[in-house]
Every structure is written in C-alpha cells, then in structure tokens.
Length: 239
Image (tube, rainbow, N blue to C red; front, side):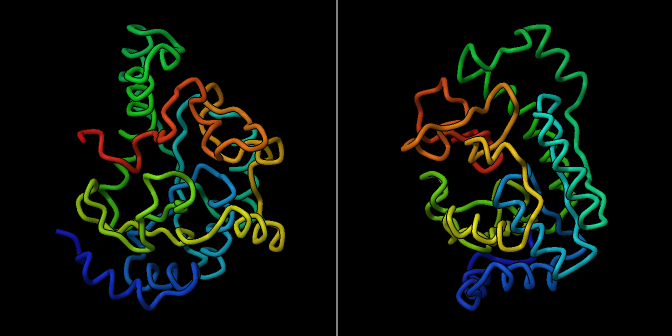
C-alpha cells in the first residue's frame, strides 16, 4: 500500500492553488524518493525550472528509447548544464528490443496499432515501470486539455497502475498558453522542435509537426485515426 489514500490526497488538492505549491508539498512529503519523468516538452521545461528553484537536489529522469530526435539530446545537455544536475537516463532492455526488431522489423509501429503499442511498451513503459518501483512519487507534465484521457486528472493522485505511489501533476489545470508564457518569461531551456510546430515530442519516427487547427496530440502517431492516443505510460493496457 502507498503512503496516501486518494481521499487524503483530495483534501490536500483542495489546499493547492499553484503548481509551485503542488511541488512544494511533493518535496516535503516524498523526497528523495520523488523524481520528474521528462520528455523535455514545454510542460517539462516549466516544471524542471520550478523544481530546481524549490529544491536544488531535485531528481530528473528520462527514457532514451533509441529513436529520439537529436534536438531532444541537445535539450538534455542544456538542462544538465543550466541546473547543474545529472539526468538519470533509462534504456530499454537490449534483448527485448533485438527480439522485437528481428521479428517485426525496425519500423514495425507503422504496420498496426498493436505493433506500435508493443514498441512503446518495450522502449518506454517497461523501463519506466522499473524506475517507478523505486519511488514514492513521480512528477508528470500532464495537462487536462491534452486529451480526453486526462480530463479527470488531479494535481495529486494515487497511481493505481504503479503500486499506489503518488502521481504529481503540477500543471494539470494549466493551458498550453500559460505553459509557454512561463517558458518565455523564465527563459527555460526547451526542445527547439517546439518552435517548428511540434507541440508534443516523442520518438523521431512517430512525431511530426501539426497543422493549424489540429489537435495538439495530432502529431503523435499521426497515421492512426484514434484521437485518444497514448503511449501507455498514463493508461491501463489491460482495460
């Protein structure tokens, strides 16, 4: 069992008005077994900046899937230097990747939703799950307006998919516009693909810029028709 119930977290949620207050509570109650998962999008840029202003010993980790854009690696270096921190980099199991690619091809994700979900599971979900087993809480960049899966999310949640640890969503009530306003005002390091029309950045072959008027998640797995697309880090595969 986790340290907090959802009822307890709901009471705390009612007292939190800003992302900084949410993060302060998380550091006070969960550090050092608390870490930020980052793919270095605009939301991550904001939260990383807030984190290090609150606690210089903040922990930050990322998933190196082996298929990331070079711009993402550049951002990692920029953040590491800016905040004088190390980034804990997680890698998929080489054997799992080898077996998948040898059986289904290097670009298997274009062939079917099932293949894409398998690739996401091996390259992202499995290494993420290993990390989360070592934590009491993890910090995400989720916002309610990103897609309908996230519309009921709260600042603090019991993560039922990961041993009841606390899922910390500081920006859950922010808009994309608020996020960018903070990035510009605080000169936060961010992935430069965001300037090229990529509001959501994942693996290089699975992410493209969006067109004017498209949903902000439209650039992820754009060849799929489902508007409710997720990689599996925030949803239950068994539903």
